[in-house]
Length: 125
Image (cartoon, rainbow, N blue to C red; front, side, top):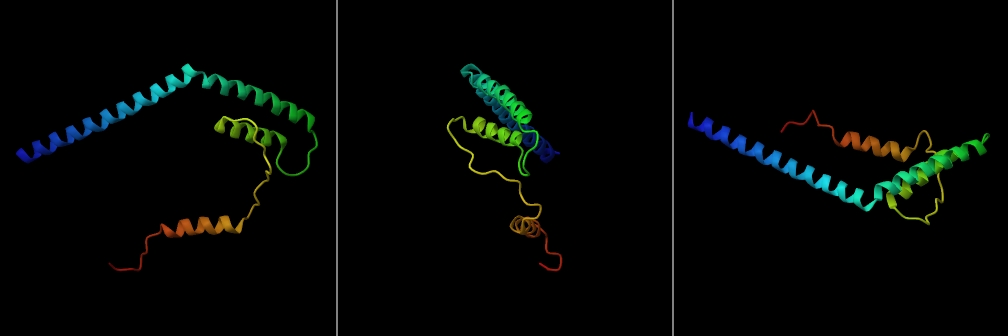
């Protein structure tokens, strides 16, 4: 009976430590969010999003018939995403194209990832 009480007490202490750490992490995340709001970084991103939406609509209305490839709206959205992540201006998108339906290197990489995690069934340990 005494061992069960010790195990129960240890479990209670461990659970308390886990929830205390989770509470601390939530507090840190909220403080970072509060600091970002106070600095106004969120407002800049929201403004950029509306500006990009206007640019996308303008590009779509200008380009009724387009060449095969990536649409200008998708290019504008990708450029906006890169600008928002980097927070910089003055970058240039050099190339953007759709991936081929079957890329042998990508297929081989996926196959290698899948087979490396399989458990060998015929081996005896």
